[in-house]
Length: 240
Image (cartoon, rainbow, N blue to C red; front, top):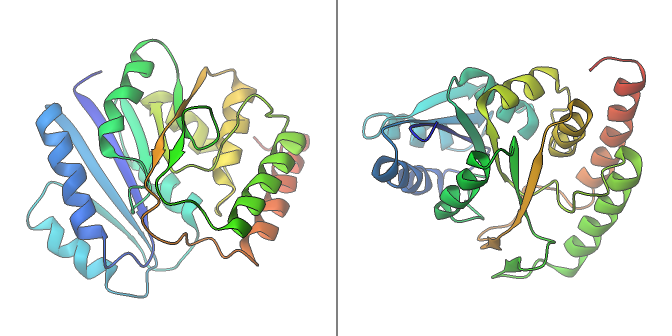
């Protein structure tokens, strides 16, 4: 298990950072793993993200999935995970809000027997180098409250931090069932993991938060709320 890891990086309009951050992930993995893969999924970017990724292909071992249309982070992550065949699969946000060095700490929990290990901004010990803006904090807390109630996931504090690791077969099973393409997909996969009975470990992290989130504060939270309702409806209709 320790020699096969896949890192999925979804990206949308990340021309300024994807080149250096993908190289950073590559250099970290190259030093520690004999067998690894990096899969970057371009989610219909309308800047020069795909050009930066094509340049990367000439210098490092990387797989690029280029979705011509923007379909959402959930779809991008799903495409990457279902393309992987590694023993351990994880996804990280393109801006690397959590240090890649945390991979070893997360992998240690997988080796202990956990099926899924997720980063948390809300557990004791978690820190933000750059505090989120007040309105984002309020939106995050409201969403957390609604998610806990609607999906009955009270034991999980944070589903939305973009740094999650899975046993390979676990990731495949969950994402083959998932249906949400937007930002609420992370709540869906935790809901599905709990429904199936997988063991989940939540770890506090240092969040660097280097750039502004792609979440549109006056639009996306409403879609995320409706997606929570969709998850419940899908479950009621036995579509999972």
